[in-house]
Length: 136
Image (tube, rainbow, N blue to C red; front, top):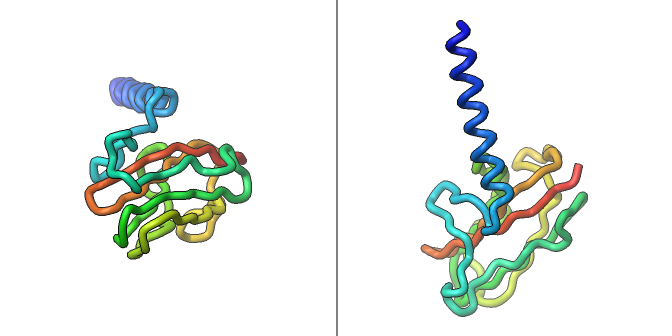
């Protein structure tokens, strides 16, 4: 039983170390399911994901993004473990700027705990990821 506890503590320490690295490194955040990568300057002209405003937020935050042409866009919110919390947008949209708001609730309408969350824009093969902070 003691060996099992030691292994559990080692696994927990590893998870916390990786989580700390993902939260405090300088880039936009971790790779998420589907191979999400951070937005880079070399991305297609007219494609972009802005930093949410306000950030940090308590009640509601706005996410602004841009599409270069009419395409299906998906915006998904993830927790720090990379698990999807809510899909805000999943539809074909016209080219140009778009805005969606998030109220800090999951897909069941439950208020989430304060902390760091990630939001990802996926349009075809292009993806952009940003980090945001929900205040308790």
